[in-house]
Image (cartoon, rainbow, N blue to C red; front, side, top):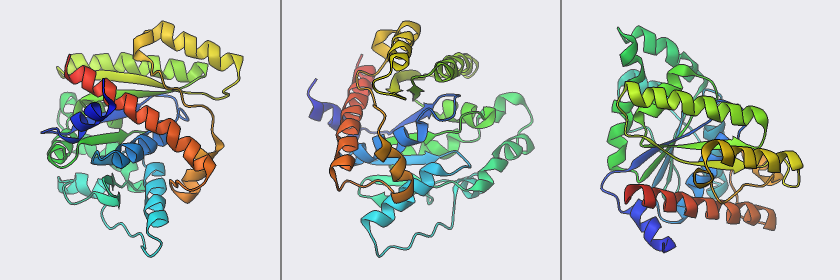
Length: 283
């Protein structure tokens, strides 16, 4: 399929799509994948929002630094974060522009109180997963793609993200615990799908290599294909690249050859991402 056609399919939708980037294993590359896919989609003309659902706020920090890197005269101040929006029952005015077509709904450490909020504002277990969906749905009128960056283990956040999503993208680092985390995540996903009658699909499993020349990584990649099916695993594999870690300190930059190496790889990921959405939406 023509790459431009698949990108146009994302950018010209009547309603945006919500995708959770998940895995129960910490350190599986969820945040890096979320912000770098979003960055590349924005460069391709897709209006993209990252919602940071992790009280560790790594996506928020990296994207605010990206904003500063692209506008040195800008002083980053965020008055309203996601927990403010939850408390006030609206996310509409919360997204912060990072660069053209890339926006952030920022988090703060107070989001660690989200589970407490859930139990204080619901009377039955079924309703515990329905807090975020009515707040996220109106944003689908404004954004083409909304990526949810979730913490590794939080039942309340995970089930709310899944219920609000059209798809999930599983970030998979090539190690045994990450494979187990992905399997457990999919198991719970199927439970939520049944309980809430969700029309949610797995967009794919994006492999992130711990060691691009390692035999263990090769074996784990094959194990993932065996476990989930070859078609579900992204053809594009993210190699271990030290520069990705630096983006947590500098924000996302596209200046030297090391930056460009990362950007080239994630442009391929964004292209395959768009292709997978197109195929799923038109099958």
